[in-house]
Amino acid sequence: MAPDLKAEIDALGPVGHLASPNKIHHLFLAEWKDAYPAAKLWGPQSTIRKRSDLNFQPALTDTPPSEWAGNIDQAWFRGSPALDEIVFFHLLSRTAIIADLSENFSDEFLAAHWRGWQRVLARLWKITVGYGYAPLEWRLSWFDRRPARQALAKMLSWQPERVVMAHGEWQRDGGQAYLERAFAWLGPGSNAP
Image 1 (spheres, rainbow, N blue to C red):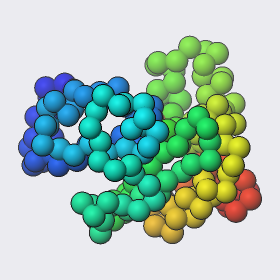
Image 2: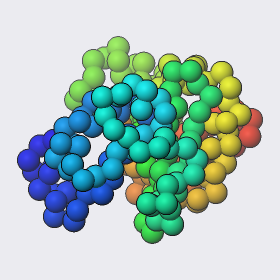
Image 3: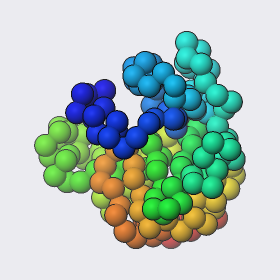
């Protein structure tokens, strides 16, 4: 947590909730909880198991908790032994919020930060602008795709205008089409071409 970032967040108002969308995005939860001790801490059961040192609210699932129901909806992508993730949808701004289920790196970013062989892999894995897939290791770990396809159907029913992801270029418009393309890897029932 950088001081400038904390100042920007503080300017928005009090922080009531801190959410980890999956067991990968947990590294700085303790630091944020220390900075905002009154905030409730949330995550799926996989995060709660991984971070037994922290005091979480009940595990996040497909149903948003009453604390944000009506403002934020959510879909629980599961079916992989390696990763499950809560995808959020902010109703007012019509924005889907994704952590690791979509990565959308630009050529400029890759050229500045990744080695040549890594850029080749990024393109082969389709974690680049034009695709926005999840990394290959996550896609291959999805042995039971039915629950993920149900979560995808819910996510698409939101008809988002925007998509914000933790890794890559955000989609400021055309969110629905972006998600249909980015989740085509789920196969039948996911609007795959």
